[in-house]
Length: 225
Length: 225
DNA sequence: AAGAGCTGCGACAGCCCTGTTTCAGTTAGC
DNA sequence: GCTAACTGAAACAGGGCTGTCGCAGCTCTT
Image 1 (cartoon, each protein chain N blue to C red):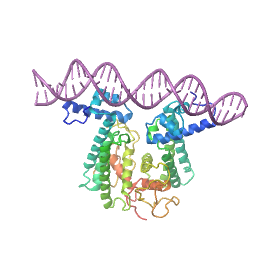
Image 2: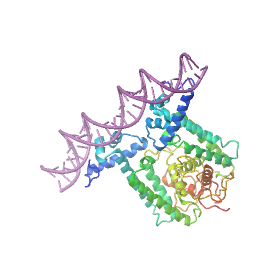
Image 3: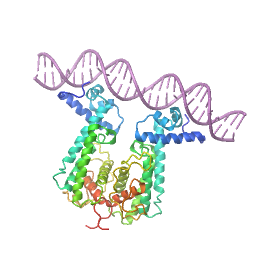
Image 4: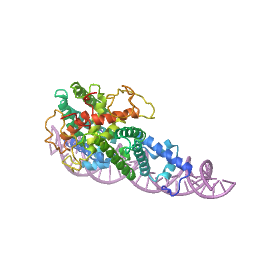
């Protein structure tokens, strides 16, 4: 019954909570309707223990969503959107977000939405995102008459799309497949990453480049080199 | 038990099937985990009847997905991708798809995926889509070195994003909200639709323009008028 | 008008999931 | 080492949903 611990948990209990949350993400990502039992099993714990730590299934999902949202906010912040050059910050943040979203696909997905604190974090993240885009707009890299909210949505959509391709089960150098790196050699002022002409894709930095590039310039032909 | 009728259904039974499918889409779109009972009620039918027409919940969802996939394919075909000028076809198809997807949000969503026949139709649709994009590429409107699969994914993502905004509960002139039509006055060779400078958005044609425009040119500043 | 088809109603069995409780045994922390 | 915290095991009540049946009554079809 004690699910909102007044005092800190004991070390082993803390470990259990961690294991449960991680397992929940893993299991629910593949099977959104998974049972508490399945989650417990994946966490190496009994169903009883799961209920001891999370009052209800909803509480578990909420905790998961909140944790993931926090990591997402952290990913943005790690790009230093306030201090770094806007395009650099956008690129870094994008790469970070790709990493986080790949690892917390369920917790950041629609199925986990509706969680109160998580929703507020997401709003805040969206605000920061638009701020950053605004700074880029001031540089003239985004059209002056562009609707930044639309830009943000396009940006979000592309991030989501990129993560649909390969399941990326282990976050490792997964099965390649059909990768050709279409519009490489971007004109953005970011650091290296584009080693030469052909990027292997799949790695967050290359994907981030592709996303930012596509958002800014689309897929049409470039004016000039 | 007779769910794959050898002979045609009677008129009233046919009507029931229609009503059930329509209700299922309506109900499941808002509440993916809805009960057979809720679907039946929304269809003005008893739960028993639903089970009489569809062997199981899965069978119902499959039928729904298949029907919607067919309508989607039809939406593409109505753009005359083979005969019309590629950009015109793309614009028309986009507008049609927006209409279909708005009306069959659940049946075309991820929750309804996994249905055998529907999946094959979606593959075919993707093929047609890439074909059309290839024709546009030959015109030089898409960069020659662009990965068409990536272009298709970006295109899909934007279509999906556009439909997230307003729920569009009744398909009517719903509650407007924050609409500003960012990068309007596209350079595409489509017909009118852009009445002047300010488009009201929300209507499929205007949204299609926006999508196509963004896919091709991104949100960056235009070279020149 | 007659018969086949379809529907609503009510009820049933079966299943799975959630959430709780108790108790004995183990583990962390002072 | 002692105590409090934590866990596994087992069982329980409760609830909901699915899928099926039989029957009486309505409605389409010819």
